[in-house]
Image (cartoon, rainbow, N blue to C red; front, top):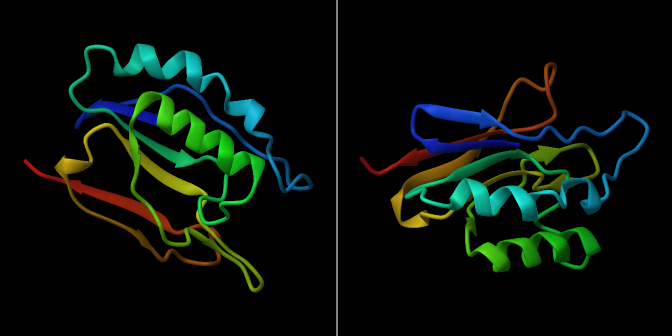
Length: 130
């Protein structure tokens, strides 16, 4: 996960990686966000959190999705990406997310296809208002 509290500043606070043989990462592995987010958001006019959360935002019936929604509802940021960001021959999932406390400043956001040889994830982009 990457947090930006200023357009030119990115803070790598937490990297959640999954092993090649374990397709699901428990939401408990990112539960530390309950501790991190208040510190990041305090005194911050705009915060952007982006990265591969390994929680499928398109599958609204899982415990992982429920955890993410509880987290978002606790701190009131908005998740912007609602399209698949990882596609295989059999699945389409939204794992790569953009979460911000200032969605009003988001001019545009999207998932852009990448070279399938190098990654099976789309690149996520955000353009903000000046």
